[in-house]
Length: 192
Image (cartoon, rainbow, N blue to C red):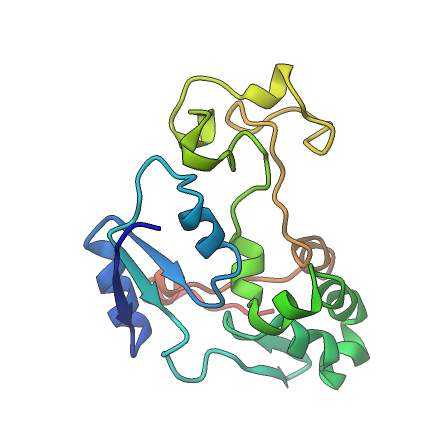
């Protein structure tokens, strides 16, 4: 793994500011990102990792006004075991409970599960072995190559890989809304 600067953000604004400086990535649970960095999958290695786990109160799971609200740093295992989620949002509890292995569920966050990089073996090839379209290259190697776990409906932006999130289908079925710092800055509010 190459060297990088590690910043422990104390607020969302501090994290946004650090990311805006360029060549930076977010880390929380790290279950997806660290393997990607170790294998040097990305054509541009980040100079900075911005740790979100040091931002207080982003790991909540609560019901307010009949609406489920989950912070981006809520741990998948906590979501799966939450009596609140199990009671009215069973599909999400089951999806979180079936994500990866027990150890990953105990470290991984819902934000990371939603935003993880795709699992295409061409994209994930160590040492950036394939300059695929997701990395700025000119083609999707899965289109003509090994693609049995990829999209059956065709590619997005010429890429056949699908989003590997276990929780995203349940969130879509439950008509979830995601609030980001950008939307908050634009004074738009909504919630899951």
